[in-house]
Every structure is written in structure tokens, then in C-alpha cells.
Length: 242
Image 1: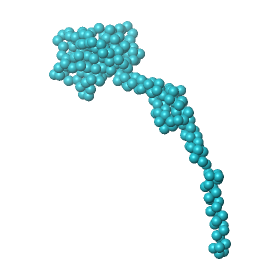
Image 2 (image 1 turned 90 degrees about the vertical axis):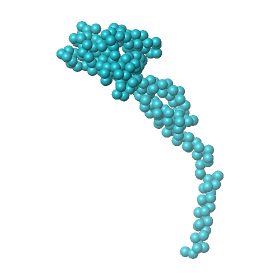
Image 3 (image 1 turned 90 degrees about the horizontal axis):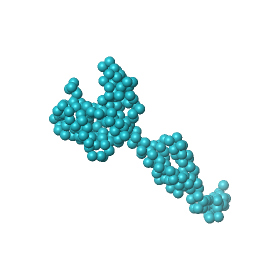
Image 4 (image 1 turned 120 degrees about the horizontal axis):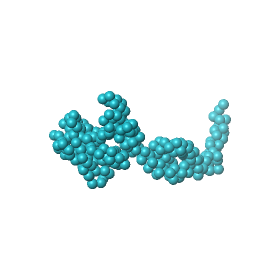
């Protein structure tokens, strides 16, 4: 077939292409393209919204927060984003409060077992200040033979106290008040707080305790205990003991 025969067919094809690209062809207009893109964003945002609402409804707020933040940040202008913005601030506050509550609860350790022929239950927490190897442990103890006690247990040489002494204790920012204390006769690096029932009752309502103590070889030091996660149900009374 000669080139002259093929030329009319090529012209027909070129004309068809021009027609398709012309305003009067079938190609979508810019407005149609924008509408299609917005519809696709709405559909994607709606899917994410469903997942966000599932997390909220099942109270998995820590998982709901990043999903909601993604919808608001990356799908602005969608109906889903508008819906999320109504609830996200409150969900963020709840998730933050839950995380802080879990952190405080994790600071406490609870143990139940046999000790010196009796049943013993303890609840203990390390100081957040000082930290590291210099931490001091606050221990609440109930023993079937010895009764109840509250004491500080430190590392190194223990505490300085001549007979009976006083530990200034501040509760939730209030001015410190002296609490009578004494060293154990057995010589452990510990110091016991007198009137332990009142101390434990005060601790159960507190968020933070500060204690001014004298440490052998280190002098005066302020201990800080974040006690807000204490769970009295995990430190139950023993039968017949206070």
C-alpha cells in the first residue's frame, strides 16, 4: 500500500484525537475533576471516620486519637473532619488522663506471700526524686504477726535519727508537717513512720508526697513520691489486724 493511500487514514485519526481533547469532547472539565477528587477524599475520610468511631465506642481512646488527628490534618474540608472536630479535643484529654493514670499505677508494686512464718502484704513505690541508684522506697506492710507499718527503705547507710525523730511531710503542695518516726532496732537502712493508720489514710487521698529526711553520709534530702496511682484494694486488711 502506498504512502498516499495511508495518509487519509492518518488524518482521520488525528482529527479524532483533536476532537477528544477539545472542550466539546468527553474529557472531564476541571470542575468535574475537582468534584471527583473531593468525592474520593470524602470516601477515604468516611472509612477512617468509621474506624475512629469504633475506637471511641469501645473506649480505646489512645488508638482513636491518632486516627482523629489524621482525619483533621489530612482530610480538612470533608464531612468526616467536621464530625471528628466535635469530639477530638475531649477524646485527647481523656486519652492523656488515662495514660497518666496508668503511669502512676505502674509506679506501685504489690506483693503477697509468706514472711517469717506469717502472711505478709506489701505495697511499695520508689521515689521519683532522687532517682537512679539513690532512690528510696516507701513501703506499706501488713503482717499477720507484726501488724501494720509504713516505712522508708534506702540504700547505703540508711537514715540518721537519734531515738525518735520527725520527718517533715508535705502532701500535694501543702506546707510540710512533722511526722514522728524511729529507726528499727534490727539495724536495717530503714525508718518507720509512727501513726501509720493516719499516714496511709492521707496517702490514699494524695497525688504527691514530699519527705525531708537525713541520710547517713549524704545529709538532708527531699524525697518525692508520686503516690496518685495507689490502689487500696490491692493492699487489703489482714483478718484480726489493723
